[in-house]
Image 1 (tube, rainbow, N blue to C red):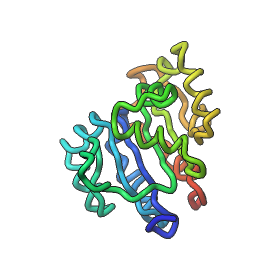
Image 2 (cartoon, rainbow, N blue to C red):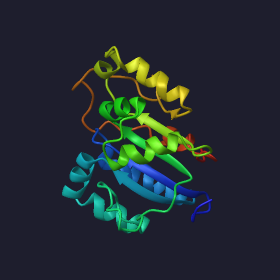
Image 3 (cartoon, rainbow, N blue to C red):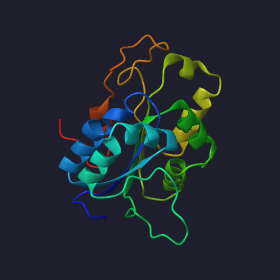
Length: 188
């Protein structure tokens, strides 16, 4: 197991509503639970969080650089090997690419590899709306991730799907449900 008392948690954030609260909703509670957290963002999420100063706050909290681009082959790995990965929120684009094996950015590459690594759990919260879920390919993406053993935080009991632009702009993501899916869970 990695450096924290629970190990290393690879946290991935994508360009979906709620990613701006990644630090307060997921990273701070995970650190408090004893995880060493290493954050990776999709390129767009990286731009969003860099623009509002959140990237710097995440780096200060975790003591590790936040990744949103791949490293050069000659550069050392900036993160320790993760014992578990969590993706929250996962955009519809990220879910589709991950389910079909596309790894065209650092955030997809590391989670795609984790899915194929024995003993490394992956927790994923799809932060999508009702229109995304009605797309004919969506159910196949969810089924592929379930078949791969991904722990999905998904369903009306944790995230009722709303129509596009009909929900509150500051809708809180189900951070507690995500934390509860981590190995060892989260205290109630």
